[in-house]
Length: 116
Length: 113
Image (cartoon, rainbow over all chains, first blue to last red; front, side, top):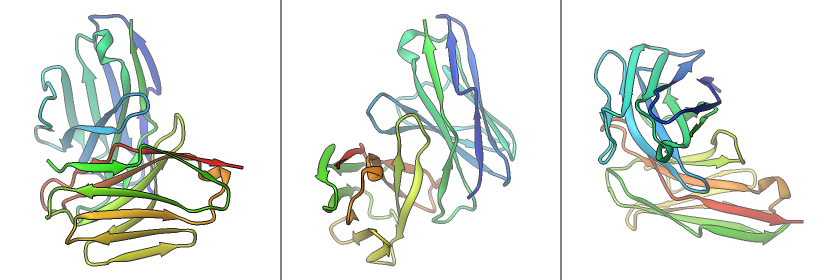
C-alpha cells in the first residue's frame, strides 16, 4: 500500500511553546490530507481536512487559530499546535487517500505530544 | 458531519470463536465503510471495506455486512486467533463532500488463548 510518513513520532514541549508535526505522502500525491486526534483508548476524532493550496476545513469545536494547518505541496501537510497547554497532550495522526472516491485511507505513524 | 456509533466497546472471546462488531451511521449519503485494526501504539491498518452498492464482502476469516436501509454495518471475524487482539474501528465516508472518514468509538477485542 501507499506510505504516509509522520514526524516526529514523539515530542515533549513546554507549556506556551509551539510544535510542528509533518505529514508526508512518500509515493503518491495527496491533494487532501486529514488530521485526527486520539485520546488514550478512544476513537480517532477528525480535527480538520487539509487541502493543498487552500485553507483547511476544520471540524466543529476545533480552534483553527490553535491548530494551524498548512498544505503547501501535494506531498506535505503540517499541523502546528500553537501555545501548547497540557490539555493539548494527545496522539495526533494524519491520513491521506489516493483518489477521491471510496478509497482506502493510509495513516501516518502518529505523533505522541506531551506538554509539560 | 456524520455520526458513527460502534458496539461493543470491549469484547473478549475464546480462541476459535467468532467475534462480531456492529456500527450504525447517521447520514444516508455515506457510501464507503472501511474497518481498521489498530494495535497498541501503531497506526490503523485497513482490514476490509465495503461500498454502498454491495451488501456483503468476505476476505478469508473476515466479513463485513451492510444494511443501507437500517444504516448499519457489521464486522465478523471467524476462527479468532490471539493475533486478532487489537482495537477495531469502523468508519463511514461520503465521497462527494470532502471525502472525510468519521470513525466509530472503537472496540477492544481480546482473544483468549
